[in-house]
Length: 84
Image (tube, rainbow, N blue to C red; front, top):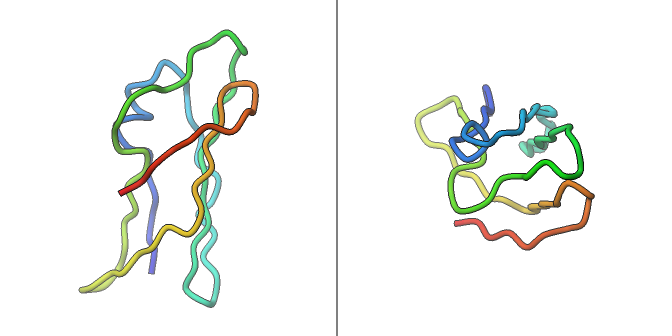
């Protein structure tokens, strides 16, 4: 069970302020969440490698799998992102 989700260091060190959407936990065990930021189109977004989110789970053993990751630039254009 997901208890909480917080922004990771990559978001915290950005000049933009990010807001969490969710988390929404479903009965099938899936949890949906996202982060968004507001600001001018000329304001630089985040760049580089790092932790975007920290997921806090309940229980002794937690298994997690990312099914979908969407990243966009300040204009809403999708950007390539990789997760490990």
